[in-house]
Length: 445
Image (cartoon, rainbow, N blue to C red; front, side, top):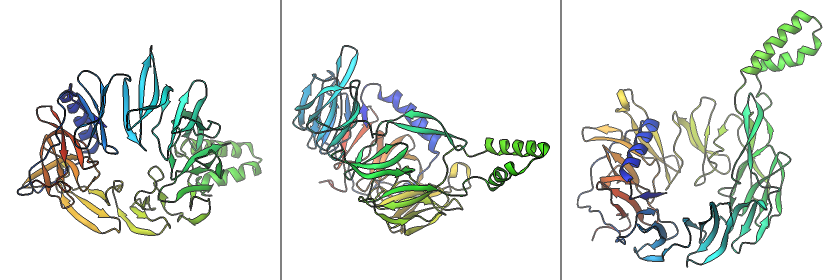
C-alpha cells in the first residue's frame, strides 16, 4: 500500500466515507501517554508517493516521476531512475518493475542493488514467494520461474480458474491469478482435483482432493469427500422414491416439489469433510464435522477460525484441538501480532455502549476497550495490530493505540498505514507525507 501527495485529500475522504459505511465501528481511546512525543524519519523533499517499508526499504515516486527506494534511515537505497514506469514492493529480495513498450506494459524484476535480474517480458507477474514467482506471457501462458528467470513449471497444473456455484452446481468458471508457494509447496489442480507441487515442479502430493488450501504453519486443510447429508432430507427422499411411483399425478407432484427444493438450494458449494495434512500428505487428524472452518484465511499464527452449529466463532490449533471455545457472536479479525479483535455491539444508537475485546493466542482476554466514554469515541481502525500498535481514527484524524487502549501517537493525521520495520507512512493535516517511528521501538530521546 502506498499514499500519494497529489490530490490526497479528495481521495482520502472518499476512502474514509467508504470505510465508515462498511464498518460502522467505533473505538474508545484513553488519551496520549504522558511525555510521549512523535518522532519522524527524515525524508528527501522531492517525492510524491511512498509505500510501506518492506524488507528494510520503501518505494517512492518523485515529483519528477522517477522511481526510487529508501532505506530505513531515509537515504536512497536505490537512487531515482526512469528506466521503468511502475514498480512494486520487495519480497524475498526482489521487486517487480514494469515498463511500457508502446501501449503494452511488460514486467520484470530487480534486486535490492537495483540490478535488472529478469527483463521486462511478462504481461502479468506475482511477487516472489519461496524464491519462485508466478508470471504470464502470451507465448507460454502462466508459469513459475526462479530468481534467474528459468521456468520451473508450466501452466498444466497451475490453478488459473475457480468455480462459480449456483444451487449446489458449478455454473461457470472465472479467471484467477494462480496461488503462491507456501512453505515450499503450491496448491495445484488436475482433472478437477487438488494436490501440491514442490519448488521443482514435481507433484509432491497427488491431485486427489475435492477442496484444499495452501500450507500455513506446517498444515493444510483438505477434503476427500462431502458431508453425506448436505442436501435437504426431503429432497433425498423424493429422489429415492420418484422412480418407484407409477402414478402420473403423484409423479407430477413429486417433480414439482423437487423443482421447488432445487431452486431453493444454497448458492454455494456443498459442505465438505475437512482433514488436516502435513507437507508429506500424511493425515494429521479430521476436523469435527460440527465445525465450519474459515478456509479463506486458513491458519494464522498457528490458529484457524471456525464456526459451530450455533454460528459462534472460536479457534482451533494445528492438531484440530479447540484452544479458544466458540463463544463469539461476531467474526473475530485475523490474528496479527499475537492478538485478534472481537467487536461486541451495544444496544445504544451507533453501538456507543459496545466494546472491543483483544484476545491472545491462548484465548486470554488482553483488554476490553469500550467504543465510547466521556473522553470521546473512535470511528474506525485498521483492524490489525502491527508491531504492538493499531491505527485508529478519532473524530476526523488518525493516531496509534497500544494493546492496553492507550493512544501512544496522537491523532494528528489524515491517513495512517500499519507499522512495518519500525516505521509507518502517514499523511498530516496539511497533506504532507511523513514516516513516523514506532515509539515502542524508538522511544523519544
